[in-house]
Length: 287
Image (cartoon, rainbow, N blue to C red):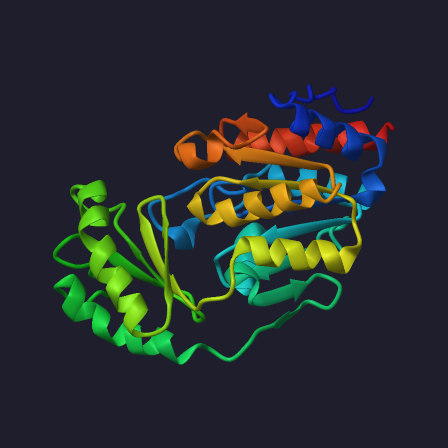
């Protein structure tokens, strides 16, 4: 007895409808690209505790053999995304690719190795100034007077305000001085959902996605994300559409209207994204 059929939700835009139809008609020519936190994994107070939704990896493993490629594009270090996602050694995901640090790092399931550039010198220099800027030692263990804490990412770092007494006020207060800190050290500031990340310039999810599509030679692109850092990937899909590539933009959650109002299909969160991927897998397997 087979698995019960999962309904496949319909996009709300003509471009998205065209993109989904192209994916279903020619899955072998399609790339499935996804963010990690907030898309495959629920947002949690401590990012070190984030894990892929229990239904996400089985859905990806069922879908991957039928499409050109599955790629996870994340601001996290690639190795952490692989570990927290539970992606290594999964049957069906032998060719999964994880692009970490917005594409600066790459992990290939086929080799199990990570390729990464040397760290930008501005990251360590800016990190050294954080304790004074935050009004405390900035350690993840103790937090700061404002209740913020720092997540170390190797190629970047992020200041989280989700644990502060007033997360939005802390976010708003820190945004300008952190932007100035980034500028002084040749970095860029990437705002997100109660998080402000400083990272090297010239890398974003749009650049990573465009390069990966060019490398693969795929025609159709599905991209799913949930936060402001996914906007460059949305823009990349729009550019690809203008060049004749069918595309489907999926938004996980409605917390970031800049994303949800631009999406072709908005889903309630990672559980719904996992079910959507499972429905896609069933649809293309039966095609």
